[in-house]
Length: 464
Image (cartoon, rainbow, N blue to C red; front, side, top):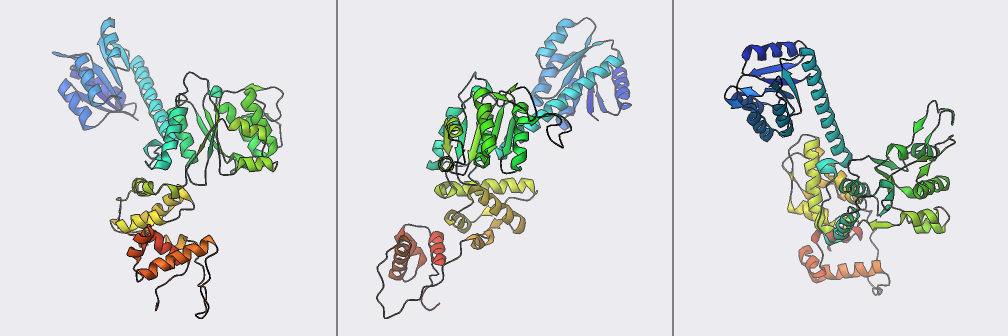
């Protein structure tokens, strides 16, 4: 139940109200002056305040304003004398949630308090769900200022400027990029920055459901449409009316569903499975894939007309290997997330750990980096993360076996890019007496990257 602060200079009346609400399961605190009321709000935010507009020589309206300064979202119900409509109006303008008139009917007062508490809980739930839906401070954070990210920020800024349009009139957006580059995150940011932010954002991973169920999930079905259809179900297009649908891995949809999706985009209508009539829908489409849709269209596995319809606004997200300047920032960001998630103190990355992270190839991109940091935060004790504690060695590609070269045979001229790279590495190491730091400076790469290449080609100093 709720904690209610009752503020009334008529102590007998205030304590009677307290006993009334105590019997209904609430916890009440009674104060008889404005300073005591403000002190109570500072000490612990109540769920609701019942505030008398006359507190001796103090104007209750001024007390209300001071409470609002301390807690802007604190719900306050004011108690005003009979017929003081002007006072009630002034209180509502000052931020009061509701008012009751003295002498008051206790049942009416209980109804007002119940309604006020219900509205407060509803608002808090909505704010929580909105934070969770768009990712909150962690989930919605686009981290990094590398040159490769500038087009991403510019794209989001441009797309967010469409105002005064119905959801279905927003141009479709197609997000491209390797697995783990953050396409889902960018879709959520696009929704949150747009005029549709207060509406639904519904994401569907097209690989998460069997192909036979995706159509029912998207467009819904009527009762009896198939064996297990015991009741009518609205599809995601209907549920997301006014908002955004994000279709991740859209390249995995089969051709039949692609055709119905194209109709939904073009005609703004869907028909449930087993239905006889169309239903108008109003949604904005954001799609994403790591596949080459042009090649799939050439092979007959993706509708070319759907590709044209999706490919109105297109953004290709950069892989993490092209964002070296952002890796340390992202790692620190994920450390903070894991610290809060697992209630552990955050750890500091040593310079060697930062160098190891920067040099790593990151085939799985940002998602792989997040998993590496999470694993280290769970397994490593202490206040710092060293390079060797990140477990990156086990994630490197298998090194090539040493090549046996006959001492008598002349070294062949490098004919492939791989052979040329190995030759340059060997030359730089030998000319610098196998000093990795000097060799790395000569090659213009980091020491960790040079060590990785040495492991790849199984290159070791003579005698080791």
